Length: 212
Length: 250
Image 1 (spheres, each protein chain N blue to C red):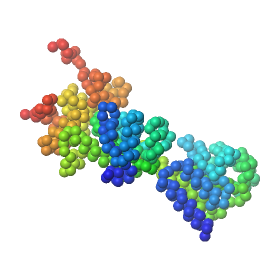
Image 2 (cartoon, rainbow over the protein chains, first blue to last red):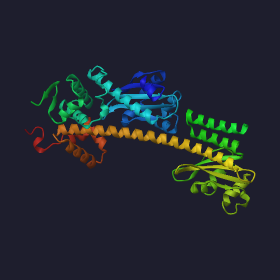
Image 3 (cartoon, one colour):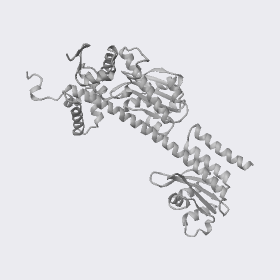
Image 4 (cartoon, chains in turn blue, yellow):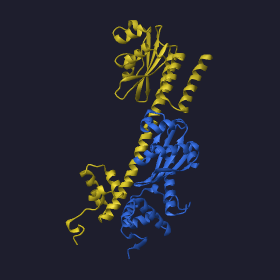
């Protein structure tokens, strides 16, 4: 609700990436629900593109020639009920967990402030989803200090290193990193620094070894 | 006074159109209609310059083919073209005496029944995007007040178009920037993978990544993504083999 109000859109919807593409998880209202389902069914639309292109897709006018060209089946159906869709991938590099979609009844682009707000909400949603997967309970006191919006290089380098050490994917590595920081009550940036400096190594089978 | 109420009403109406949901052609058409109504002219057209500086007709108060042609002719010669190039209003009170100023245009205009023409620049600060074209059947120039009002209407059109363009470009830039930022993260993750796999320093990992991308003529972020996914097609990068390290040669 806060997101919808801040960005002055009609509805907000959240979907997560599943094995068959993105699956709707939450929708504020019927419009969002219908359009999320439609994109999932058709396999085309701004939310789909947001994940494949790795960046936001801002389609302020679904009835424009540009929109009709990009999503021939989706745009025609969607334009009947919605003016525009703004899709923000919930991502950090190779880690993509879902999409935050903003639906607007009118064909009006997001202004700079609304766009910035949407990014903040997308980051928050990303952190919440990651924490949920890592089994970390949402805790208002630690967020947003450890939000991924800090985008520190070391954090992402450590993630890469961990994925090799643990022989798991990048997303799994990020989850492990966050879980470790949480379990040891340490800032994730500090843990990342240790990993990159090779003072802290992770090993498979969830045993952790420090440099002794 | 009824006249001033009409003017006020016209501006309110235009402003309403801007806020509700912007359809450029619809808006410009409305503008040309208001020009005819308020400026005491008989026809109005709005031309915008395309990317190459050619003037294209965007909206006209009348859709009569012959008259449309009249507007479009001004791609090659005419008051609008002059107006666009000089960035200043251009007028002719009597096309019959225009001489060789715009021979083809003057002839076509008179054939269509028009005697006088006025072009007003659509301009904002340094940028000129087109011109408004006003035609009259009777000879003569527009009054000072009508000219002021006509320019004000042209200015409203200019501001709204530039604003809409700026918003669209802004959206595109915003998309691109966020995508680029995410690519950066992807590259950092790939650096980490390489650094660990091959026991490299981070800066060497980056150099290795970049060299590979260049040698194989692939975008850097593509290669980075492949590295993070453990894709076999970058095996040469992530699992380089030396003769002494080949499996089975222990």
